[in-house]
Length: 138
Image (tube, rainbow, N blue to C red; front, side, top):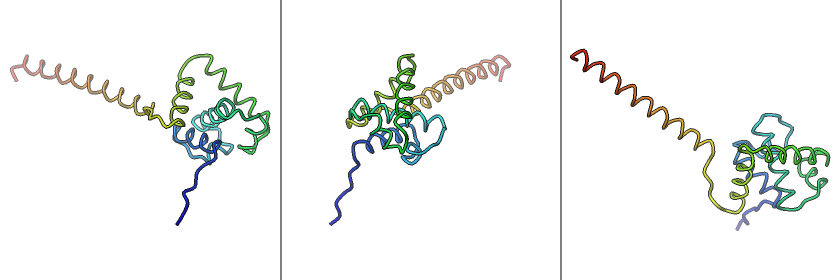
């Protein structure tokens, strides 16, 4: 009989952030500077601080980084949250994932909105083509 492995709470946060931003846990824990990776890493550090009440040195150790890196990352994401935009919503959606609540995929919502807009534009164009053809007696 094999016992299912469970992740430690910090690793659960990293996994949730990686899933949300469509990157790997290895990416989040690494040194990559791609936007999705950095957003996932900063969100994970913020959530470790706010949800698990880990100290900056403890957070730094989770990422094999110095505590000053954790301080910078958390201040940076807190500034983005204060500015408004989507960061606060993204962090809230990750929190919901961690609490077992399903959340919509933000990329999926944007894609669905784009598809709907394209359908409307196509329907308009087809209507105009039909009107032109009727006007020519076609």
